[in-house]
Length: 376
Length: 227
Image (tube, rainbow over all chains, first blue to last red; front, side):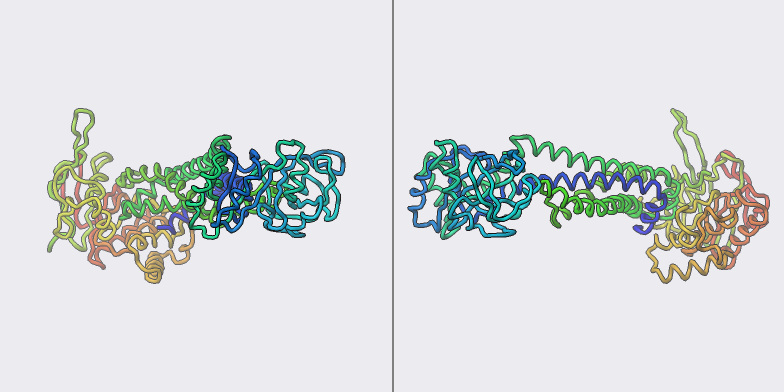
């Protein structure tokens, strides 16, 4: 019966084209919105996820990685004293202005880390090494920032917070949720450059690696006791909290969700309408099939297969379009996180929605009186 | 000889407001293997309703339908499509061919419903269409066929599954005289050569020449039977 559905779906080419236009649009919208959302969440949590840490010491009530409230880095010693720790490293986070060659200033997120053990630093380098920020006023900038900052030439001198700083490396995939470029530098220099005196000798986070990751809950509990003015989070809890903040508290998640759902609704509406129109146009043929002995299952298969064909063809046209728009979008600092898992998941969702959209057609055919074939 | 198809006191009543209207009222008739039974009567006399009930498409209000001696009127909704598919072939006044399928594909559909293998489907379809004089029209869509060719395709579709009974509703109504003659000859061949039964409703005066029995239906009742 799938054969018959295919013939029926491709019979009216004009209707098929209009349907596909709607389905491609809706599938692209759903795919792009979901990929954008995932990309933004990946960017918002990238440093946490790539740090290699098991635990994070943060200020009380921290809501997401980018909005850190510093605390005295002397507390590092309290944390470092524990035997279960493999290492504990401070990370600073502040915002500053990078002066561009044309005199304009660009807001950047400054991440300071220990160059000797670059926890919180870049994890994927296009050129240079994470340790290169040590030994002077050096910085590493993500290559995606070229759109905002202009040419990123190794060895070039820049002005960060009115201080001269040399570009010594280019990282890959290190982006923020806000799309502000990340400037990686040494922990010491980041402290030194902070104009706010209260933020000097202050860490935004202490990243901790345990000798045995299985001890994470026990060590977290002990650290909460030792550092009552701080919040102790596991890496996964910190990632979840950051995602929750951007998704729920800013209302951004609802906006993305609404657009993605709208995409699905447009697709479902288009497919439902087309399959219904096809069913109504060919109800005489459906009645004939019923009279000829087609079972309810046969007829349902024809209708569902039509919906599945529309959804599948439309979706698989939308996928390359989404992949093609990935590179131009990423140049602007936005990440479109399209991968096989997402494509497969959204294909299943699109298919399910399309099949559900065929409900009214199925009802109509089930109630169709095959005796109409004897009425000329 | 046991009748291939038999109706016993078959009735179909419809409710129109508070009044029960009898579309078919206590009709009894039978058709033997190798016979053509012709049902005649004016429009609205109940011919189509009777054919629908005989073909297990419409459930009677009362009475029994016996297919080779077996009462099929009481079968479940799941069993009826199977009985229709295996035992009956249908030919309609307005052909009801699938416009998006070629002549060959239209005929094959009946075999696809029975899950017949592709090789057998192709062989039987090509053979039957050739015997219907349509060997050079097999890959034409219905829109490109004449009325006579369309009805021959419809008959081939009805016969390809080798049914026991062929139900034909005004099979020549949309055809000219010559094509009508061809269609009646095909029905006679099916009945006499294959020993199958044909029940046909027709206004065509020529139909009487091909029928073994003629039933006259008026206001849902059989009035005259001619052997």
